[in-house]
Amino acid sequence: MSWIESYSFGRIVIDGVVYSEDIVLLGREVRRGWWRKEGHRVTEEDLESVVEYGPELLIIGTGSGGLMTVPEELAGILDIELEFHPTRRAVERYNQELERGKRLAGAFHLTC
Image (cartoon, rainbow, N blue to C red):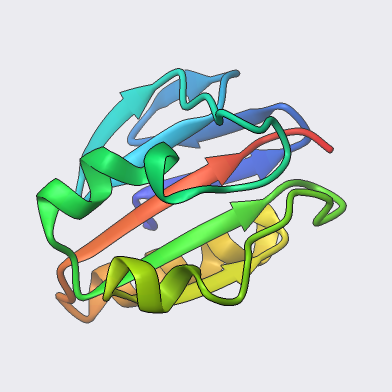
């Protein structure tokens, strides 16, 4: 069974717990209430807890329709390998990489 069990618009189920707000994942730790300074655009400032955690890979879920933007230069600024996908695909990738044992972080926008 996958750690992130399911995702649908505005709702994600992780390890049996339902979340209806944007979240940050640090390995298997869930941090609720991920807010971005510029709303639907991710900035370095929005990912301070991720940088402190020091993952090998950061996977960002850009929303149901992929409307949240992630600047191309963000990976270089953070010095972290970065992937971003619409949230459904980002969830799949997170589960895959978690299974592989990679030191992983995620940031998931659940709507849009």
